[in-house]
Length: 204
Image 1 (cartoon, rainbow, N blue to C red):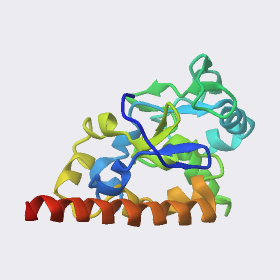
Image 2 (cartoon, rainbow, N blue to C red):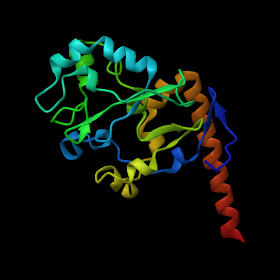
Image 3 (cartoon, rainbow, N blue to C red):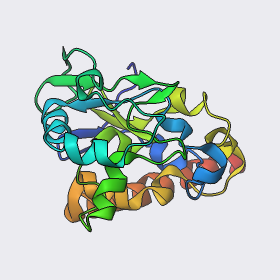
Image 4 (cartoon, rainbow, N blue to C red):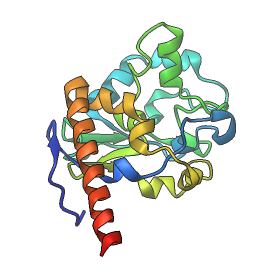
């Protein structure tokens, strides 16, 4: 990543793109069928271990479009410094979708948490929670390459809402309340600077 970023919150550089990139106001599974999950996701080693520890419960809620052999759910681990453990483990793709995505487009990992009255993201990998946000080389930014692949999310260019506005809960989950407060203050500062710069250009 060639850009240089000045703001750091909780050890992450912040890409101001998250304040300006347009995005759909909310997911609509009835339209997209969980399209963002078609390609699988990378999980941290600890997330992988948590998922495997719940394999029997996960299998119980899988439908006939999913692979119930837990030994075929994940790729081989690989080193990746963007993950807390330094190890990333990718989920496999089965029937042209993430192995945990059911035929209705719902994530089985989130589904079992809700069914069991647990926190909805108890088993869900961080990178699934954050989308369309992503952590890349230590920078919190927008996964625009992934967005461009999808027919529903790609209409975001015509939206008025931004990634920041649509993903406040996800950002609070990642950064905590204090980190999110700092991020919000940085957003106001950044947008005000952009506004002032635009005024100067218009007045020139």
